[in-house]
Image (cartoon, rainbow, N blue to C red; front, side):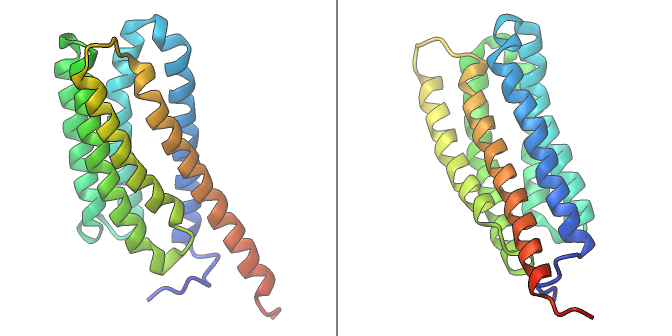
Length: 193
């Protein structure tokens, strides 16, 4: 069993890098969604398919660096749901943004649940997972909000999904910083050899 005190373990270093990478890509996506993509529907369409596709790839990369998909069932399920979401968005986008927002709502609920499970499982080995657990729970609430907006008649766009991605970016950044601070504290308390 890994001890949280292993501040320099390769898996722990990977997790920090992974969280920083997830933050950076989500932040770029959000910035584009609130600016350029609002005025360019073809770009918005590509971005709406790319976001869950990237989530699937990210879950695969993380699980493969953390013992494989067979040992990380919540990430395997998240990968599957994200791939299905990307396909569903690609095939549904011509039917309008209400349909896409509905798909994103369902995805947010499911992927949030799987992220929450992953965070709880990792708490024992890595600590500093409270932001990922909170993010997973909030993803479910965001999904419910998207589903209610999708059922309405008010116009919706990529900008209605961007806040969800922005909160995700924020939580990935908080998780990366939390692990970095935790590692620094553990190193400062370690006995000098």
